[in-house]
Length: 155
View 1 (spheres, helix red, strand yellow):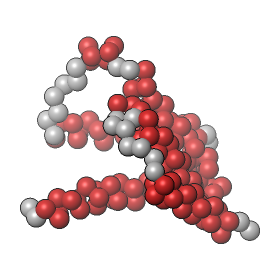
View 2 (tube, one colour; view 1 turned 90 degrees about the vertical axis):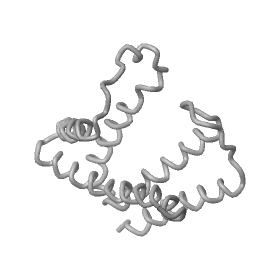
View 3 (cartoon, one colour; view 1 turned 120 degrees about the vertical axis):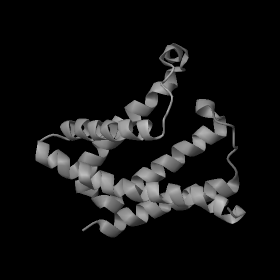
């Protein structure tokens, strides 16, 4: 495989994963309306995720988890599940109010801002990547973009 393709493949996969997120928000919002409460939709969404995960684990022949190691997990290792519920519930409640683009642009701005903090301090076991002027300028443009999208949709 050519080197440029090896470099581009992760970017393409990440792009496709990101492209799925607005559809997730929209479908979960519709599910919330049908079920009568956003938290029921969040539960159904997580159950569907689990039902999709099990066949993927079997297909990839993933080894059984080393459950005995869970006691050694740092406190923040459990935050992924909490963040998932927070995101799904926010998407259910806010996507109908903000629209898909309005919600997702806020999510992206929040992700980039918190990622900058994670990088700066090497949080969650990740290597430190100091904030510099160029990175701050990029994040600033994202935040300005978020505001422009929001202002462009007000009536």
